[in-house]
Every structure is written in C-alpha cells, then in structure tokens.
Picture 1 (spheres, one colour):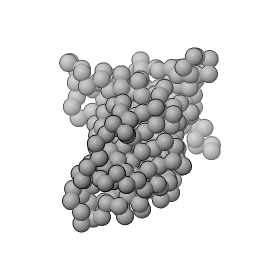
Picture 2 (cartoon, rainbow, N blue to C red):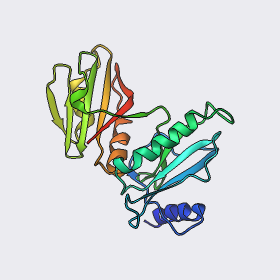
Picture 3 (tube, rainbow, N blue to C red):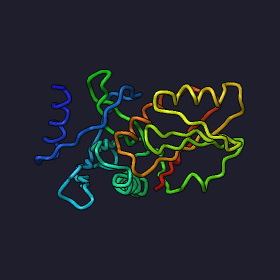
Picture 4 (cartoon, rainbow, N blue to C red):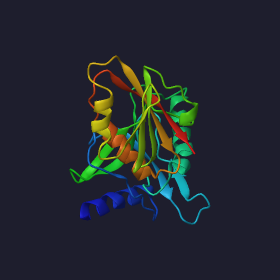
Length: 221
C-alpha cells in the first residue's frame, strides 16, 4: 500500500498539479521496465460532465508513450481519447520513430511495482457482436462484465465462462491441434478501465498454438 501511494504521488508530481491517477491493478505483465518514455494522463474528474480530463502536454512523438488511465473511468469515456492519441502518433509526418511503442501503465501487485501492457497495434472500432461473421476461422469473446463473458464458436454455439475460467475454457474450445484461428474481442463500453485491463492482462498469458488474437478490438453499447 505504501509503495502504491508512492506510485500515485509520482504521477501527481510529474503532472505539476494536485491530481492523482488511480492506476489499474494487474497480477501479470510482460513488461516491467520501459526506457525512453513520455507520459499522458487521463484523470477521473467528478467536477466535469464526462468525468474525464486528458493531459498530454509532455508527450514526445519519438518516445515510447506511457498512457496513465484512471481505473475508475469507463471504456466509453476513455477510448475516444486513446484513439485520438493513437492517431496523433500514427499520422505524424515528422519526428517519427517507427520503433516507439504505446503502453498502458499499471500497478503490478505481484511485484509491487509498475507493469505495462502494450497496445501499439490495437485498433479500436465500434461493432456489435451480432454484426460480426463467425466462421471456421474467426471466433469471438464477448465481455459484458466480468461475470458475463461468452465464447462464440464457429457454429454460433456459445460457451459462458468467467474471469477465473476463461483461459482454461479457451484452451479447451480451441485445441492445440486445430487449424489456425483468429479470436476477436468485443468489449461493452460500460466496462471500467480496471475491468478491461484485468481481462487484457489475462489474455496476455494465453499460450495456445494456432490461435491469434486480432489487432482490432470491438466496443459496443
């Protein structure tokens, strides 16, 4: 707890004002140290109509970007700002570094330190699961809430699962010896950013052969 307060204090000081980002918590991350970075902050602000404020004054286009998002915000609030930042970097015509990545900053409770989830190649798009074609190669996972998660297979059979069972169920549904398949993710916009990061962190631990997670992530009402 003491170290987590320090993490939030560091965010406060680096922003140069009296605002704090409550970082989402994870128990696993592939990245625990990133060099050559600059920061952006998405604050939870109860005084604003949409409860969100973006501070991006310190972003440098040629660096790795650490995006610090308050875990209390929803995807509906966060994603327009994230897409704006992604487009800003992708469309840069000068001072561009193709090797620079984008990461969400998290509090990795397993090591009591920062952890990072990369989203450089993620493209957020609006699409409802009912409007997506499920076939032999393309399958879906629908996240309404942590307690309402569905795996949709090629024959439109639906397997209900949960946060604690999702990795086991994915491995069971998509066996190692099956043909290559793509898994498409659908997130309800009402999910909190904490819930979204928890699910992303879980899926990053998936080690099933012949199964790829699509770069496009779909959000729906």
